[in-house]
Length: 347
Figure 1: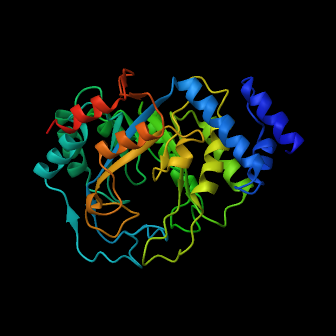
Figure 2: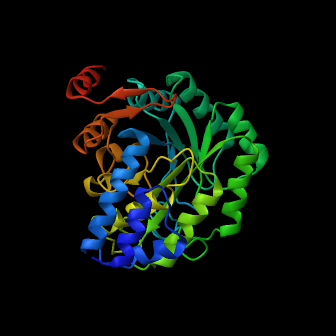
């Protein structure tokens, strides 16, 4: 066992976070090495201890789809490579039904309403109001939208949104037509409007170096985000990417991410996407249900493709050994087979 790794992880168990250089060092090991196995175990222990062995379920409703001008090379919506030729827009009844299906048990921590880089604000505000009327009060509402200004975020907040998911993605300005500066300004606009903020290290590909990954992790630490997620890039048919990192490598990144945020108070929630048992035993504690359109899917409704529903997410968390699921109001519900069966019977 590498001596420096042992020292880093022993300090982590005493609540001392690894430095930037330490994190780069940890990510330099092969994902199947004893050192990587050790760091995953320590990260899992720390994250579960800090959260009371509690998991979270997020949900996303993809509201509309059309060939997107942002043309991100990793996204199934990009105009230069998409297989979708028409426009899909969920009507109000469909939005209401999808929100109900995801939130009826009250266990969804937060619901993201996702739209395109360019979107109709009036339509989006109506969707937010429908979601707020339909979902129970403990379910938080978050936006997942294109870059926009402070005034728009104020309107979105007033329509019922609690927060925003917005990310300076890996390869921003290279794999996308959007500058990192524009993404950062949108994050600041949401912050000024009083919205909570969620971040994720994504989309991770085989080409990304430990230095690039750690740079983003520490930007998350410094940025005041409520979540610090990890998501690998999916090789969507039609895009230029055909490779992907292994789930074992993703779990190693999850572990280093979980260790890096040790000093944050409160300790952030640590999503992983897509849900993976190895990552959920390496520090991750939050997963996402999805319906409607999905930028990592070629199905018009991801419910029939890659997307998981809330029942499946509950079972994944239970199988990973989590004892509780936390709701948006902070209340924890015991995650037992009996409780899951009760929820599944609730239609």
